Length: 92
Image 1 (cartoon, one colour):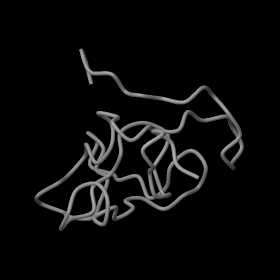
Image 2 (cartoon, helix red, strand yellow):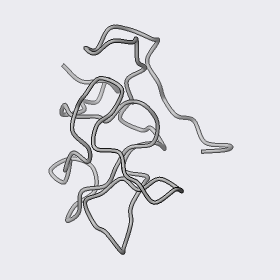
Image 3 (cartoon, one colour):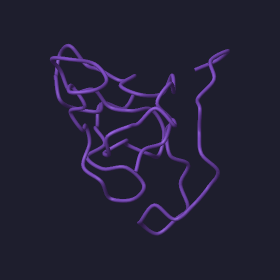
Image 4 (cartoon, helix red, strand yellow):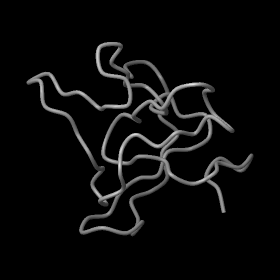
């Protein structure tokens, strides 16, 4: 994400044990991670994968209706966007 605007909300309680920053509609972090070898996973460099974000939301969330069609990809960072994103940038 170097040089890209992540379009993050301020830290807030979005559920879970720690405050998180929601991803906005134009965030470069949306649907960033993808493994061709293991579609639908969120791989880490050590070979393990993340099953949830910092809030406990399952990863990846298929946002094909409104973000990137055809395949579920993991959002970068501690927040997996799991709500429909609206034009205001953050959702309902």
